[in-house]
Length: 298
Ligand code: CA
Ligand code: ZN
Image (cartoon, rainbow, N blue to C red; front, side, top):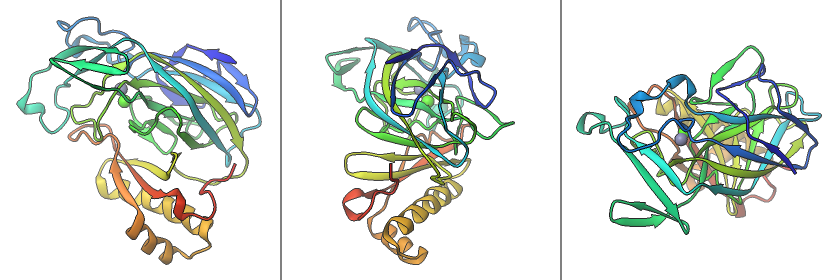
């Protein structure tokens, strides 16, 4: 088992790999919360943070043999969060920003539950930031999503599920961080229950697998994930990627794939806390049981 705990603040081909692993290896990623642990009490406002240190991602990890045009399969074997996290409203972000104060809450997590004021609810620890490096010459801050992955903020990025990312540089350069003990679709105020944690993932190389956007596999669904500044463009991206995958797996043409997707596909939001300078992220899911072949093989 490999172990990594050093962080970076961008997804970039220029990040120096912490370790090099073989396809199929297990890696433990020790991750920091999105504030790089700058938030310590409820009396502290998020505006006191050094914003250049937001959204750290642990890594990158170089996967031997990975070349552009390949895919890295990331099986999320285990995800554990620490026992206290932070959530804050953010100035000028989200639909209610002008109706609320900037406020910090420190929220304890115990026995699989989060305590908020006088109620408790189950956690669902997910990974906010995860992906591979974008194409050479491009450096994307970890707080932003894109076709490489990054700040996808998808509440299905949980233990037991498997994510697939396009490789754009040699080794792929896998990195992840920004766990949320719990978060709702859209992440309305711009933060989840931000928390440190530990992820165990198996990284497997799939050769020659041309996807443009990340794909997520759950026990019963296949999802495409994509981001853009506005809803129509993100919708176009998740739809085109799903159309390509469905057509390939079924042998149908694009029109039949489109008709099928309208009958059985669900479009859901990942992060969509508009207004926000960060792009919104959508996911489009179809039931695995409908597909005679996996959308991604390997
Ligand atoms: Ca995030
Ligand atoms: Zn976060």
